[in-house]
Length: 487
Image (cartoon, rainbow, N blue to C red; front, side, top):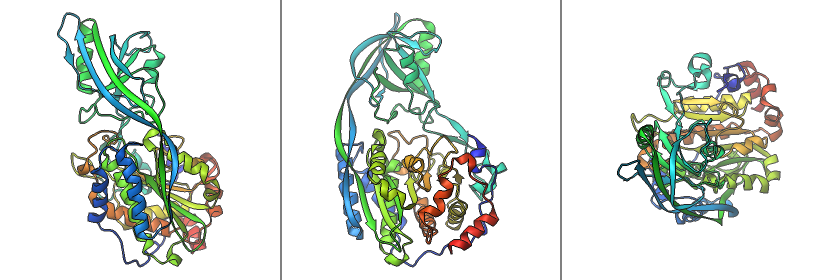
């Protein structure tokens, strides 16, 4: 990570700026209510695009929006690629040894295979793997939990108990991100066997890649321990495998779920997440659905004049099938984006199973001093600890969120996301949800949205529309002046 991109050399976030008061409201959902929504969504099963649980979720979310009194509630159609696995197995036979079945799971959108018999080879970029099944290690990235910021940019870290420094954050990706099969394909492999090396749970249930790109060879995931066993066999002599991974891909119509509320003016604040998930997925993104519903419930109980702008509540379709819901909404609503003051995205209220602490919370925030100060102030006020305030480009060319392309479109953003190692795993179950954080996250988001009162789209876009390298360094004096100007 490039620390310069975190704040371009400054850690001053206007900590002393006055916080906007929460408007009075008769209804702020409590923890049991928000978690109850997650349980309801989770109970319907695997929520991939086009699966019955996701079709149900679209209609259920729309019904909640209507119950809250939102206007223009609608399902906007989005074409998506539905991937359905049917049968999968991996049988391994060492030279002169007994055949053994190895637990596996198909690689999404990879080519199907039925009883494909191949010689196994370990991946070596300098050696052709033509006609062979390649054993390839995917090693989950491990980073300092505070990304090294506590010592150098402390205002970027909200961690008063100092639980982040000196600890490790295991991400749900290897350095290849979604391009896990490409090295093996480039080596001429006829099949891919991905070993999840170093996975904390030694799992093989992994839904990656999820970009809906069809790969030309079949593949399966196996656990890191089984991968190590296979490497031991290869060291002793030839190994043959028999691979089955049958699946179908078809085009279906999913839907972005949208509802609106009038506000003090016709400029927009968008509050979003996505409704699909790789499994039943309590965290990814059952929690995102519930956090958006909590915002809709709250703001629907506030008089229109006390909403800072017109509000759009949005659950994208097909995040785990190539992000097509996000892309479709941006293409369809270009004019509305031009008058959007802020896009807030809420994803993954997650806890660590080992100690119950929240997974490090990332808040990707446009480099606008007043907005950065509002985010920090809200996190401090509501006790949303173990949080990092990051620039949109802190971890790459765009945020690793379901709202990345809003940033690319020039819209100011605050994207909340945590990235637990189990995010794309079947182990994303109800016990992984950060229950205690649901209400504080909701209240902090309300404060951030309230801070946009009086702000126009042009006010902040004059900063975010520039390349990040040219944005002036923010400081407390500038943040305070900006706040006073808005108030």
